[in-house]
Image 1 (cartoon, rainbow, N blue to C red):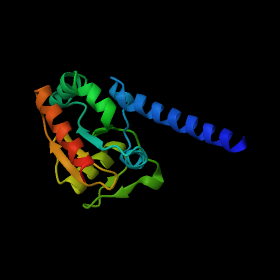
Image 2: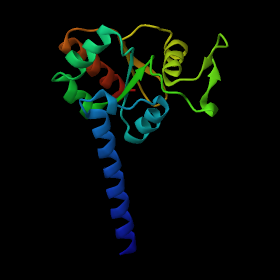
Image 3: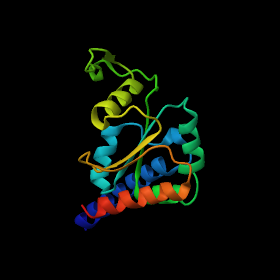
Length: 170
């Protein structure tokens, strides 16, 4: 009986955690998308889901248009909600990093905000400075697909489908 209770508790806790994460990544409000790449990598491994990295600049009109016209449109929104961990990485996020997370970039400039960390990640790991820009990666940070600004929801859905199939076949 004890074993049954423990298994039930574990299953309930795991499914509740998964549901809360799905709600976080699946809402139409970009403020509730995951904004920490390292956390997303751990979650990706746990869920066995690919990650959609969305490098953006919140002041960029194209990025805003992608969010409202593509990411929140059907069928992209539902597809993302059911198959991806969405990571919203704003290069202008002014949120300060705790002192222990701050570090110098390659030019000895202090990376002391979330936005600077996101920008450094995009430049150092993905060799790009464009926004909006999307990468589908696995929990090992392997790039499976990449896309830039897209105005056609069907073309973006095709990008997502190709990335998901690449993830499943790796």
